[in-house]
Amino acid sequence: MSLFGKKDQEITLTVRGMSCGHCEMRVSKALSGIEGVRKAEASHEKGTAIVSVDPKAEVDVAALVAAVEGAGYEAEAAG
Image (cartoon, rainbow, N blue to C red):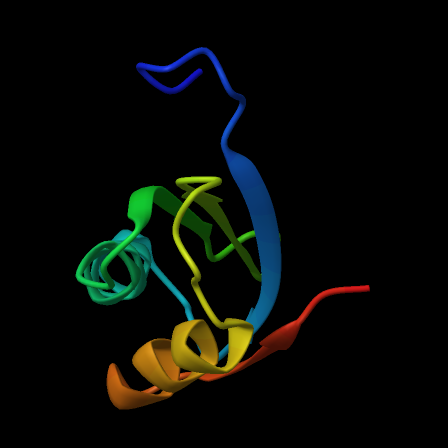
């Protein structure tokens, strides 16, 4: 929950190329650096990154994908 009582928006990305905990940390750090992202958790076992976004922020999925790709991995919106 955000400080204002509204639930964060959750975005799931499919991430390819992660193979360990260090990879998860790199992806999570890259995503967390985007304005409006409150939390990012990557899993190399599941091949995903789940991103919690401030519902008032205008976070573009393309920006999330670009951040993951900038960290050296492939990504796309899940679903």
